[in-house]
Length: 174
Ligand SMILES: [Zn+2]
Image 1 (cartoon, rainbow, N blue to C red):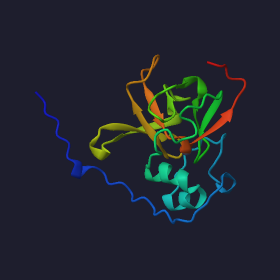
Image 2 (cartoon, protein in one colour; image 1 turned 90 degrees about the vertical axis):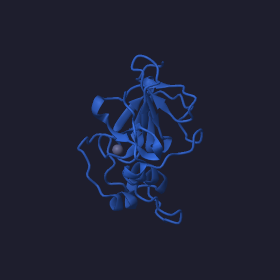
Image 3 (spheres, rainbow, N blue to C red; image 1 turned 60 degrees about the horizontal axis):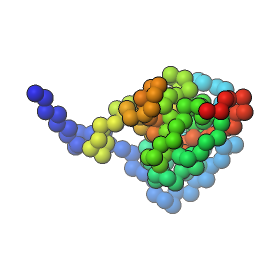
Image 4 (cartoon, rainbow, N blue to C red; image 1 turned 30 degrees about the vertical axis):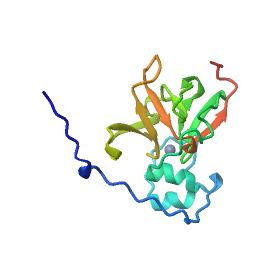
């Protein structure tokens, strides 16, 4: 018999979310780390990200916030193309791995490349989950669960705000 006991107090602490009056308004053109071709891993401080990212992207990517369900721009979006990290431009998912999920966040059954994303265990909020991070900038994207459809059985539950969609007519429709 094995009794799991999770000490909430021992969980890693999260960085405090900035106050709403934080006045940064970034734009992609001002983000020198954004590239859809450069796959070099980034090691950029949160202070620097705060200067170059729109606040909504910063809050999710760098402070692990979550957009409210059914509010993001991609949860029921069916465009054919590629999803890139909104913070750094790393290619993350293709529309052919996206599936209709009732959870209220864009959901995919696999990443575009195995190292497009990385994983970390997340024991916050009294739950045992696996966090999904961008493989290039290590920005928070969402979580992965084991209740997805075939062929992988995985559900990448992502935040729309940290995804950038680019249409690609050369990709086949589902
Ligand atoms: Zn990224």
